[in-house]
Image (cartoon, rainbow, N blue to C red; front, side, top):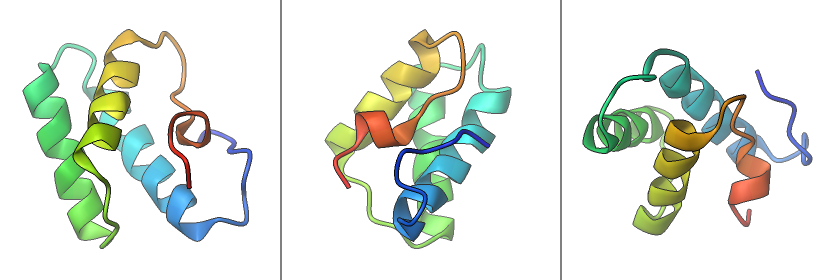
Amino acid sequence: MTETNTPDNPELEAIQLVVDRVSSWQDSATEQIIAEELRKGFDEIAVEVEPDEIEKLVDAIQNETGDVDVSELLDR
C-alpha cells in the first residue's frame, strides 16, 4: 500500500486501498472502466467520493508511472 501523509485518516486510508487495488490491474483499461471500478470499490467501503475526485484519481492512475498517493490528490 502507498504511504499516505495522513495515516490517522481512516477514510483516506480506505480510499487509498481501493485506488491501489484498481491501479494494480488497470494498466490498459479505459477511463470509463477505471472510474467504474473505483466507484464499485468506494461503494463497497461505503465512502462517498465526488465525481471530480474520481476524475482526478482516474487521471492519476492512467498517467502516473508509480503509485498514486490519494493524500496528494484529495482534500480530506
